[in-house]
Each structure stands twice: as structure tokens, then as C-alpha cells.
Image (cartoon, helix red, strand yellow):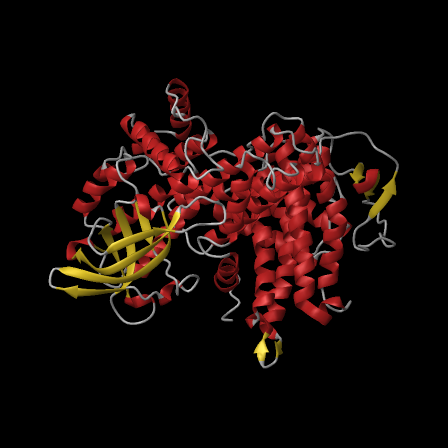
Amino acid sequence: MKVGEFRQGLRAWLAANDLTPDDGPAPEGDHGLDAQVARLARVRRALWAAGWMRYGWPLEVGGLGGPSVLRAVLGEEVASRDLAEPGLWSMVEVLVPTLIDYAPPALAAEMVPRLLGGEEQWCQGFSEPGSGSDLASLSTRAVLDGDAWVVTGQKVWTSLAQYAARCVLLARTGGPGHGGISAFFVDMDAPGITVRPLRTMHGVDEFAEVFFDEVRVPATRLLGAPGDGWRLAMDLLPHERSTCFWHRVAHLYSRLDRLLADGCEPDADALGAVWLDLHTVRCRSAATQQALADGGRLGPETSVDKILLAGAEQRLFDTARDLLPGSVELARDGAWRTEYLYSRAATIYGGTAEIQRNIVARRLLDLGKE
Amino acid sequence: MDAAERELLEEALRKTMTTSAPGSGLDAALADLGWAQMLAEEPDTAVPLVFRLLGETGAQAAVLNDVVLHAAGRPVGATLPLPYTGGTWVEWARDGFPGGGALDPGLPLRPVGPGSAVPLAGGRRALGWWLVGTGRAMLTLAREHVLDRHQFGRPLASFQALRHRLAETYVALEGAEAVLAAAGDDTGSLLAKAAAGRAALTAARHCQQALGGIGFTAEHALHRHVRRALVLDGLLGSTRELTREAGGLLLSEPRAPRLVDL
């Protein structure tokens, strides 16, 4: 299916099928994460049943085929209508390609439709208390015992773990460094798993700590071969930085619209600078998706997209705070407050601003080692 | 034009720009290479290529006149008053006007009285490519310097503070190129020149710092690119003016325009 045809059909369908739920617009600003996650599942179920959620995914996992750019368009239409927060939505874009590439085909065929169809939520167990930017130093261990791996350790910053039925987990099966890491597809209801949501400064408890205490994971749930974990983690980044970034940019444009609609101070310099940043990352992201569609493999150059996106996001919310005085600090309606605070994390999650610049310097400018 | 032809053309243009006398010499050489025909028949290939290379090589020709004249439907090869920042006007002379007296003595910009309004989008895109090329030239100089020079027993390139400045420059230039490549209409071209001007000024700031003392001397090439970036930024609207104009446009719209789509 052609992109234009898909977009037109989807828009017509969304106009006829209002997915805005009864609970009104997205409950931002309070702690309505339960409602947000429930809404996300409802939206996915409806889009799956109508077929829209199946485009851009291969037939083997329940998809209808077609280019991955269709998923970018779907996410943009969803984000533009505030039907789902793009950060929560993005888990699909990150984890489904991982399952397709690394899980045994039968497992992928069984599990992927549950995530796409809104039946389940999944999470991603990567970061640890002692391994943030230096992810390759992670110390959660998996030891083979008969027909199962026994996992012990602790994860942190695991988004939506408290709602998740499955987890794509990185654990150490070999020696130190990248080569000793393997990946697993773990059932979150397995005995020995404890989830503790983290309180964050923006008031939405979407991250959790996950404790693994001698959790038995069937050997059939190894993703790829032993030692493939680091490659899996690196392969997942381009997915996050193509489709998901496009969704996030669409979301940020909707917030720029809201800033104008809320009657902000008419500071043309500041607003022009916000638009210039958003336009720049949108152009860059469109080029990245074109490269992907042309069969290119994405690598370190996506750090450029990441740096542009984080900068645009923080400038947008800094400007909102400047031009809607008090909206972040005093307003009873906490919409701007929540998103302003969340934007502080844009230069931290998914690889910090500093790590991204290290990658640009080393890999793209070829400046050698530090 | 296929990829191989484009590569040959780039090679020929680069050689011409590095060997011809700046100004009228290069104008004549570009005319011999078929500039007028390229501009008429394949502007989307020719303009980005020629102007980016002017920036990268530090060369100079009066071809901006042709881009603006062509867009106005007038014969190329002449000159016309061009708006400069602050409400002033300049002419990009073709008559051997020596420049001088201004920040970039290599550019023959002559102050003139106000001219008539002409379409500026094409000229802004062309200048955007020139500014990005100038930024790339500065980044190349800074990169060579930090790899070659040692202090405290290590190459400067091993210090994170400098690596991050150069990474910042690279990101700004890449972003500006994406905006330029996507620019078509008036607003897209306005934003493209703003993005390119901002990237070139970012490059000037960080590369100057990375080059330290040597970059402040007249014997090093950096200062010529810094001067060029500053002067070209002001032509057909500075980064600051264009950004403000974009903001004004936004305030008159019910919704922020999404200028590119998948």
C-alpha cells in the first residue's frame, strides 16, 4: 500500500471511529498512568481489529506487509490526536523488530500479535543500578541449569514493568564486556520477579525497578545465540530512532500548536527558534526513514537525530515556560508542568547527550579514542 | 544526471574553483563549464553543488546574482540590488569592484540604494548551501588541527571538551543540510537559510576555539571562512531576522505548518 493512500484511509477511518475514550482527553498532570496504559491497549486493540496496526509488519507475525514507513504514519496520526503518549506507544516499535529478528519464528508468531493487538504490554530490561551509560558492564547473571537459565540480578528504568506480561532482558552468561551478554524473553509472572515502580520528578511512575531472584527462564526463551545480547541491543536502536522519533516529533508539533492556542506571549524570536528546531529534526528524521526505506542500515548517524530531537524538545518546553508564565509553576491544570519536567530527561534517556556526542566524535568525525 | 556524471561534475567544479582567480576569473570558468545551462535545466542538482563547493573551497563568484535573476525570470549575467540585514541593500559586483573596507575583503559587495522586491527563495537556498560548505571547511580545518597538535603529551582530539564542540558543529551542519535538501517553497527556504546560517555560526564559534591561537592568526585559513560566514549570514536575511520572521508567521497561523511529510 502506498503511503498517501494509507494516510488518507487511516484519517477517514479515525474520523469515523473516534478512539478518544470516555474519560476525556489524556489524563496528564495527575498520576493517571493506569488510565493511560488502559487507553493505549484500547487504541491498539481497535487499530489491530481494523487492520491499521498490521501494516508494515511481516505476514509471519500477523502483519499485512508493506513498508515500515506506514507504521511511522500510523504513529504520527495517533500522536497528533493525543490518542496515546508516544513514549508508551514506542515499546511496540522497539520490541517487535527485536522478536522478529532474534526469537525462534514460532515464538515470534505466537507472541507478537499479543503486543500489537493490545492484549499485552511488554518491557525492556536493560539498565541496572551500576550500569547506565556503561551498559556493557551489566552484572545481572544467567546460569544454565538443565533446560532453563537461572537469572539473578536487578534492573532499573524499566518502563511499564508493572503492567508488562513479558520482558526482553539482557543478562550476563559469559565473561566481562560486550561478548558475555545474552538476551532472553522472560514471562513477568515467573516466580522470583519483583517489580517496584519508581517515583519520578514529573509524577508519572512509568519506570520501575525489577528484581530477579533465581528466576528460571526456559532455554527456548533465549533470543539469538548465547553472547548475542549486545548485538540485539545495538540493532534495536535504529528502530527507536526512525519510526519512534517521527512519532515524538509529531507529538512535539502538537504541543507547539497547543502553546499557540493557549495564548502565549507573541515572542516571534523564541517561537521561530522552536519551530526551526522542530522543522530541522523533522527534516532529518524524514531523511533517515528514506534511507531505511532505500534498504540502508542505520548506524551511528542516528546519534545526530537523537541530539537534534532532545535539543528541540527541551527548547520547546523551556519556551512554553517562558511564554506562558506560571503555567509550569502555579497552574492547577498540570499539563505543562508534567511535560516540562519530563522534557528534562530527554538528554538522559536512550543514551545521554554526552554519550551521543562521544559517538559522533568517534564514529562520524573519526577523532580516535579519548 | 546520474551519480557518476554528478561525481565527474563535482570534481570538475572543485578543480575549477581551486585554480581560477576568485571573482570574474571564476565566473568566466563557470560559464565555460555551462553554468547558465545547468541553472536553467538542472537547478536542483547544480545550485546545491556549486554553492556548497564555493563554501568548501573558499572560492568566490557572482553566481548568486544568476540564481536570483533566474528566479525572477530575468536574463542571467547581470547584477541587481540584494537585500542585506538591517534594511540595507548591496550589489554583488561583477565589474572588478575590489571589495575591501568590509569584514570579508574577498567579497565584492557594494552598498547601493533600495532595489525592487524579487523572489528570494532560490537565493536563500543557494546561500544556505554556501554557508554549509563554509561550515564544513571550518570543521575540516579544526579536525586536522586537533588530530595533529599535542599538548600534555596527548593529541587535542583526545580531550572530550573539544570532541564535543566538534560533534556539536557536525550535528548543526547535518541538520541544516537536511533542511536545505527538503526546502521547496518560500517558508521552507526561509527556514533553510536560517538553519544554515545558524550552523555556520556554530561552526565558526567552535572551530575557532578548537584551533586556539593559530586560528586567530591571519596566516591560518580559518579567519577567511569565519569572515565569509558572518557576511553571507546577513545577505537575503540573517539567521536572527529569518527566525523572527518564521515566528511571526507562526503567530498568524492557527497551527504550526508541517512542511515535510513521509
